[in-house]
Length: 297
Image 1 (cartoon, rainbow, N blue to C red):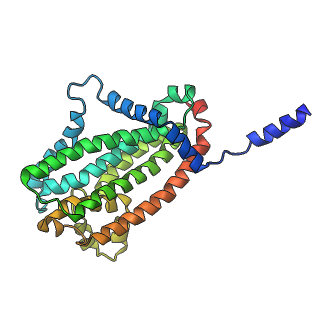
Image 2 (image 1 turned 30 degrees about the vertical axis):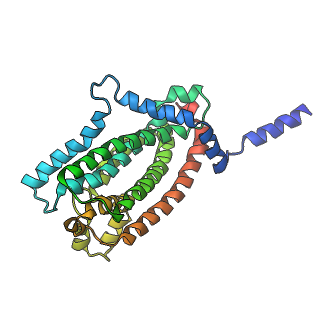
Image 3 (image 1 turned 45 degrees about the vertical axis):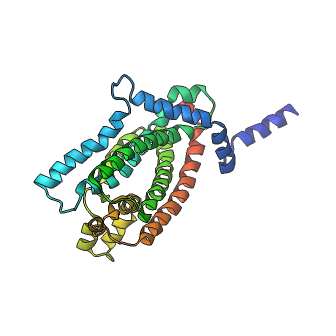
């Protein structure tokens, strides 16, 4: 009788674990305090022993603004009206994406001691990394709002509703990628370095320091190159940020590919749908690999 029970146990334990999304979501919600603590820890570790603390997160976009403003104003004139507003409106979203993806990729390996000793949903670690980047995003967004108010830029209007929509889609896309890369980085440590290189290239294929109309006009809106350019999820998200903030001015609106808001909402919807599918796939990969995290770390 005992041998039969043993064989049944062996058969059951050899089956690959199945992700039950609703049950896993409930588990994450039960551990929401852990998520909050880990997010807070990521922020405290980042600014530990610094005098300025979170002010450094505000200085980051200001430094980008200064460098690119000098380069594209005095050495390589961009011809974009109110270039500072254009740059910041696209840069903030990309900064959240790059720091969130890089942080979530290394989140499991960087918390190896915690993974091997404490029982909690492992998904919380990449989520905490994205959460820390979101907190920094809000600090940086305050800098942008203060800058817009200081120069009197007209950003208040219906188009501003695109900003929370773009932010929600950006978080979904970043989480979907980060969950997958976090799991892969445990087994293949080159993943983190590959992501760092990819983020450099991704920055330049996203219309942050140049207008999307430059690419669309050069290759033609119906060309394969233009379709590939627009297929970049970050292009749709960045354009929505720009339409919501920079597009509040008539001159700024001329720099964007389409004046209507529906065009941007449509593309955000496509990215959101694709991100949900991606999240389902990467979450399954993460869940299947998570059982071996403690051994591989």
